[in-house]
Image (cartoon, rainbow, N blue to C red; front, side, top):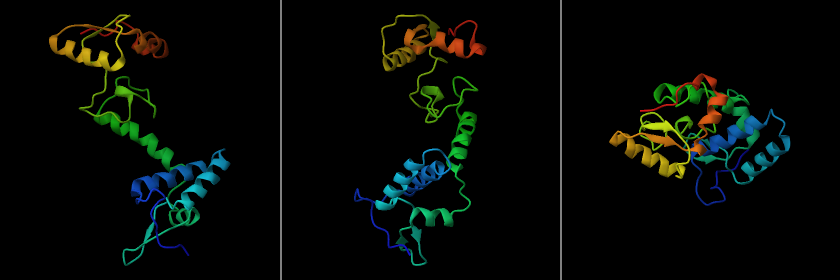
Length: 182
């Protein structure tokens, strides 16, 4: 059977959510084409004892192998992580709408990010007093800050070329029409 738990090689105990994430990544890889990646990941997880531990009736932690964890968590399908990812976006969209609806990506930025917050410092076109234009010469962060200041003062601001509005309109024709102006 498994040995008592030891700390990870970094010397600190891994938070449960991180060890569960490692397990879910391995489960996801188990049915895909990356079999060697799965084998290496499982070896590393077991070597460094990074998988979730089992608690006995006395509260003692015990290490489990990947296979033991799979057998004791039969309700966790190989696509469990994928299903979680698919559900996060719609749940977040209800609380904090994205700037462009119907565009879902785990890699989104700003108001399209899954990490956006209601009071976040994300930059969006809405409420910033912007108008379509080119050549502002500002970086993204500077442009966002300037936009916030202009919105407070009731001024309009040009959207920089690097913002990619033209490309966005080509990809999402439903956004075509007059560019936003406040």
